Image (cartoon, rainbow, N blue to C red; front, side, top):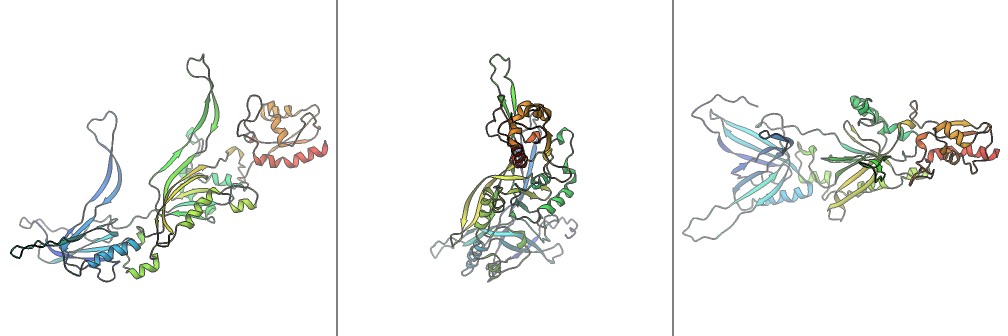
Amino acid sequence: MSVPSSFDAEYTATNFRGFSLSVDIVGGDQTLGANWQTLSLGSVTLQANDIDAGGYQQSRFQLLGQLAYGDVTLTRPWTPNQSGWIAEWFALAEQYGPTTVSVTINYLDVSGNLQKASYNFRNAYPVTWTQPNFAAVPSDQQPPSITESLTFSHAGYFDTNGLTPGIQDPEAVQVFRLMILPGSAGVPGMASALASMTSWTPMGAAMGGTSVTSAASSLVAQAMGMLGPFPSITFWVPPSSMSVSKSANWSVNNSPNANGSGPVTWGGTDPLALSFDFILDAAATDSNGMETSARNAEQLATLVGPSGHSVLPVVEQLLALCEVDPLSAVLGMGSSPLVMLLWGDFISPLCYVSDIQLQFTKFNADGEPVRATGTLSLRQYPVSDALQNPTSGGELPRTAATLYDGDSLAHVAYRAYRDPARWRDLAEVNGIDDPLRTVPGVSLLVPAAQELPARTETGRLASGSGMSGSARRAGIETSGRMQALT
């Protein structure tokens, strides 16, 4: 940026000498016919929202938002055979999207020397073309001037020598990806290992535990090393907001004589839920990769396509996240894929897709959808820290208990869980049909307490509860030995 000249009381304004316009996407006449006489660059606004703060009467609190760039408007006298270039820009922009627009201002400095200032607009596309109005007048009257105006939108400036530094370079934003982990829900140890790959504070950090956010860079490197081979879905624009919800289950027992409420019973916690809006777009969109290119329509056609590609392949990939993964089905695990969100240093917990809502909003000439918007809902895949082997990252091995003379399953349950009523779980996991027929010296499989199903006070299984599949599978061998001995 040039150094301002010293103050001159007799010089109060720049002597404007006109300007030139260049639209890269128009191959015939990039000046759109020229003869433009007026230019309004619009305004640049930093959006901010006022918030109400209790107790404050005169202070003002604002939440800063994004920069907003006003539209640019040009006007000129109407000239035959010139407006067609404007119509061509509209048509090309509808097919190939935004492009670069450059405006060069010609002016005289204080010394009378001709100077130039360039304004280069990123991702510009035409918005409004106000066509001329014609009216017949008597021959003895002065005909009114016939003008036309053109308004275009843009996403900011770059390589501009007429503005202050700091707004010239496009922002470099990390890509927002949904990593897909096929079959990992059934692979022993995989879910446990991936569950620790998150930038979120783990359970217990608020109670004095250690937060993993202090080692974000190392964590991201580890996650990328584990997730690198897996496929992913990249969203062309990151979401502006993300909803997070977590709920705890407490049930209140009716107690008519209680002064307050009746006693409450802890029923466990629900998994963490995440949801965000997304956009899939295969048509021409704002792209930071087009700013410094001077391409005509023919070159753009080979890069983008005349009417955009279909988003159906990505949509089908999203919908498949709610179905049984083929690899998981072959292995007999019957699980849909697990997913993780990666956005720079942000790594979501290991999740599964619970709901997908989307809507096609634009189609090409072949009837293929080229744009879709929707909402993706995820739930955290529950992996207990108590079930993880600290050395291998896999599931903890189940312990074994030996039946002694005079022992019953209730005795073993009391020694293992301090709850003799848990004899039913021991019988189930070890395949014992008659708990009274036990053989001394037999080794029983004893699952971890976290794997036991929830039961009522009468010993019946609570609704929706049951022995975990891994514990049941691990008891097959033991139950076989029991049947052989009995």
